[in-house]
Amino acid sequence: MCLSMHQPWASLLVYGVKRVEGRGWNTDYRGRLWIHAASKPVEQELITSLEEQYKDIREGIKLPQHYPTSVVLGCVDVVDVLPLAEYNKRKATPTSLPSPPHHHLSQPIYDEDTDSEYLFICTNPQKLLIPIAVTGNHKLWKLPKRIYESAQAALQPIQPI
Image (cartoon, rainbow, N blue to C red; front, side):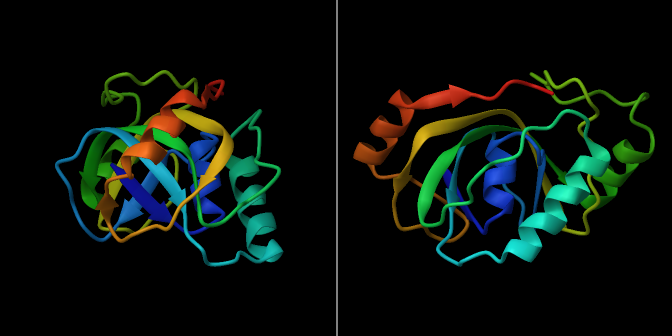
């Protein structure tokens, strides 16, 4: 499955800087989620602002050098989807609640501020060596078979921070 997102959030998720993606809708889907950067151009002021925000809550992050649009960037694993109230509960008491399965990050995952109704908890970020141009879609959608096969062959894991 694939999710189209605006930049710079799409690249930040694939680079493992952003670990939670908020949506106004719920899903039962768990597993590999390909991330597509939508076609909307991004302003440098927004990129700078978000990069500074994440530098304040994460140590040692590696930020993307480019924020391309209309491409598949890579993938993450969706390990959970939480309603906002549950996410905020875990954020308030991170030591007393379990991390999602397969959580391999060295910093708490429940550390991002959000007001979205549902939060996709994402781990195992992997980027494509070369992003693949493709037209996106709404909500969750399937990558065309030839794009999927090319993407599978070109993944590069991101080092956890």
